[in-house]
Image 1: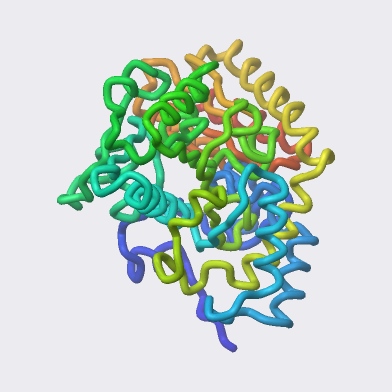
Image 2: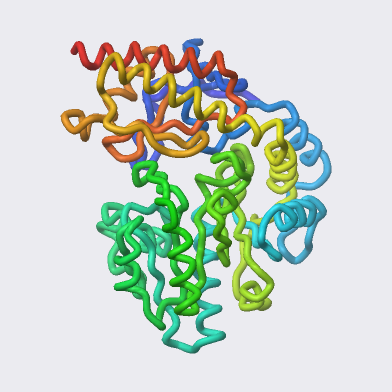
Length: 404
């Protein structure tokens, strides 16, 4: 089949303008390296925004996809399939959960979680148990419901009226939650580390205090672990590090290492509210996605991978500190495991994109979290030499921006 040559200019011609991708077009990746159409090579600190946790083109993941592709792609949920059942069993064995619902994305996993929380509240406490509380600066997806629960008003502008019964309180401020929670609250939704909101970890004791308030008011605690999950912080899910067990957990991104899949995990008691016909997904739990994710889970849920996350995190932090000692550009470096954020000093607030552009010219792919924070969410198995090469590129980029 003949393939037409394509350039970045074609994007502006044929794609809806809600994205503004970089001018270079990546065509190949291996491990933590990516090559564009012109053959330029880049170190990848983005991980596809915390997705390619095993890097690009991991041979075992590729093999899982090819093997399943020769067997069965799609059935619909009139039938179950072996990869979905195996994956669900592994996720429940690893976590607090008893039951799993599969989706295609994190937003869909959150949509299912929020619907389930309202249904559970209705079933157990009546029509008035419907309010959902989340945190300012949080991000939970782009559907109308999930963007409403998300705590960033800019993503809701122009889409009103949005679903009612959702409020937002200050992250890491338990008094703010105490003032808002009531007997009408069916769920509190939190990221254990605010990702898009600036890579801000939960303060010590905060998650425990949220859990206690949820118990006091018979509200479910929902952990959105779409960005923090599947090994990103050194535990398979970050709730395991916090000593707090949610009632519902959502996961996606790294679960498929780039193949679209998400999941909502919950207990038997809560899951019972999703009776036959109450929710569904055409592609959710498809054999291809589940076969890939099963391999990803097996590979990441191992001492070889989880056991080295903290050491790699320490290397990233030491390299960032060395850059900062030289240039005094970061106000703070924060995060956990391999979800890290370097906040720029005030005079460079709002200018994070300048550093991204300069880094790209130096052969590094990096992220921002808002306009003020450089964000890194690389492969969990990124070689140390790639970390050092990427940091050298970042230092060159920062030098150029500061000299301009």
